[in-house]
Image (tube, rainbow, N blue to C red; front, side, top):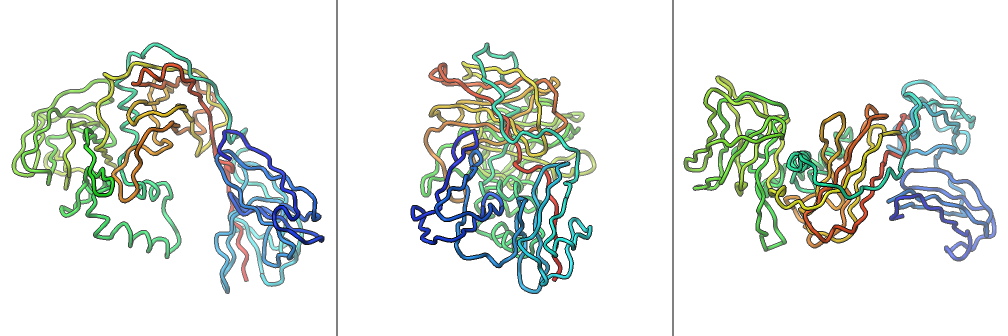
Length: 455
């Protein structure tokens, strides 16, 4: 389903899908979550709901499934291996009460528990009630919020763009997915990740900003814009976010190309204004010294060095912690090219953890021709993700050509009932007739619990 609304598809349980049986049929959904959809007569129809921008995988079988499954609830099997407890993730919404049961009495398990609380009656085939933790709220998985209407250029164009650009990175797609996935408790998954991301070939490509902050002079954060054997020209600036305003005596870029002298280096406290900073280079290092100390959070350097081994900040007598530093090296300067703006004003409702405001840009446009931001309580929040992805230093895959775009601005439950202003900026005069939209999306399930069946 490649649309913004759920669609409902009727599947006829007959020879049109390869079923020749005349008896009862079991229907299961395996994706995007597992759910038993019931027993149906051959020749009948079953309605399947496919969520927006999702695929559904359905199994129809005349053979009775003797394996373990649940009825009445969405779930995911986390672990089902011999001689170990079965671990199942129950899916629902905060404060929601669900009734569910196993497919039959299970004498192959000695106990069952949900989040540590005993529920062994489930093993007798009994239906149980379970209330998901959290406060019940009106969570809306997806809704159209409104249209962005043409407007005058806002006075803070540069801040909107820079907020957008400092919200994102140019890391390889594989790195972005690693960060999105978060930590894992599965040993084999952790070992596989380590094999890939610690491999010398991957490290040598320099497609991760952390290589400029890892204390290893051998690793480098590089501009890597390869279309297989052809390197694309980079007009990007180097942007550095040190996470919070800090007073520094000096900042040193180690291991850059010899003879590199930037056109400009600027720093800012809050992206409202920029102050130029003098730099000096010596061999393969670039030095920024701040007489009497300089307090700032953001830095941009035009152009970006091709590669950087380490960036270290000094505030006498110590070097500073860099664990939360972030950098990018592919985004240019765009504020002078902005010629169009669209605006939407409204209020957030039904948001929860994992919700996003989506700003759509229909048509086929070049990279770097549009930017999106949301103002909440006087503060601009940038889109930290986009479809297709923001530019990246590629490990393998590269994207080229024009595209439509959807920008994702993160929301949280604390934003509910707050007034917002959404702005979309464009550089291409041909965009003047488009009608951008604002949608709000959230997790299909806002709460989960762990069911453990002990053998």
